[in-house]
Length: 186
Length: 194
Figure 1 (cartoon, rainbow over the protein chains, first blue to last red):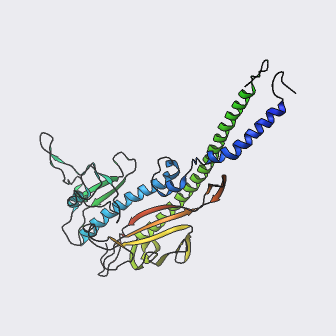
Figure 2: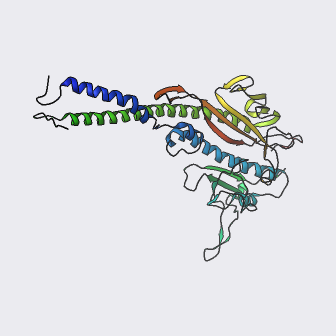
Figure 3: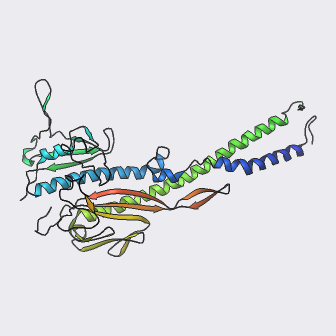
């Protein structure tokens, strides 16, 4: 079989075979060295931008565990101080947690005002905090806040309480809410 | 170069270039496909491990949150009584990549398990001045438990040796850190419950 004015089929096949072999031997290893799944460095670090879908189940769980850690730290502080006979109460607890709709992400500047409930022992986990409607801010006639932190007894039969909600970030869909009620050492 | 052309066909150059492009694109597509298959496999293993992690962490949190008395606590073992177990003595131990509860295997393929205990009643006031978490439970001081845990997986990952792509099982770890729990019914020596 031969084209009217070209190469024979045999020549074409042999040429393509040689080209394929050369490409196969030299080119494919070069191409495969562009590794699309370089797990090693990214797996160990938190740089998961490219592989977020692979790591997201673990990251989601760690995010919830971080929230739980913050809430447990708050709980520990509140329980310990109330049962140790100090005059620690819900107003002071709220002062230490942070203002509503604030992201508490550091301890240095506001150390005296906010407490480092996000502190793990080595690092600091930021959290966004907000409170429920039982807690109101007192405003003047012009709408200015004159008492930013005040508890109200919306349910007098149950005593004072605050419903604390913390989130990783302001617009995060994950949140953890705990109701703190007034406690006294018996 | 002398130009050959069939009456109604393609030149050899056109055919070669076309085939080379097809081979190149197919090669790249094949490599991507293989990588996506690897990635899918890893993702599945990852999801399975996280599911197991949830179960393990929940069980440990339930054990710890109902603790009434701690007999002994180190970084790899804790012995306690818990309402979760009807106040019976319980020992959780990490040894040889496994966690056992009262010497009964609970979970395998644990990369590391590290327990810590709050070392100061006023830990949050002293955060910049002293170490908050220690390696041993101190009866008079410790009131909270924190632990890290990691789970081993052994995915088949691509390796490139001698210009060849092979697969081998490589140990990876999925870690969860700073899991904190405050026992709600801990009895101190004076008999007070917290």
